[in-house]
Image (cartoon, rainbow, N blue to C red):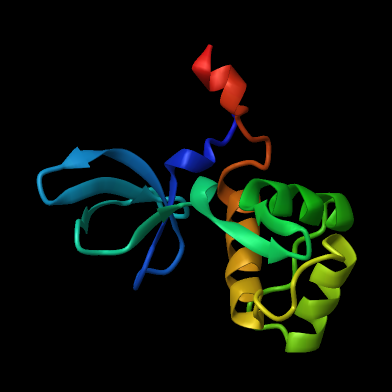
Length: 137
């Protein structure tokens, strides 16, 4: 099954990723990728779709989809280091997978989120992403 990053949500103050289900009166109905538990996410929460997130590189911004694919190309079938890994190993991973990342604006705290999201997608969804062109047709 292909993963649509426009329907995968990151919610501030909540751990993990969520799959968008439907609009609710007070926000959105989403379910956790890990357990599949449904919850109503308050409209006041900061909700971001993974399709809208990018990282800074020397050439500009790189969409998260491309970051995930670069990590997969570098790691193969191995899991990414966990978010509890030391700073040096995270920086080394991103330097190898995305050598042109902007170290002045893409911080280790961002790297921790990205590897957490990567590992969660590998475990509970897929890194086979839907194409925007295929969705429009």
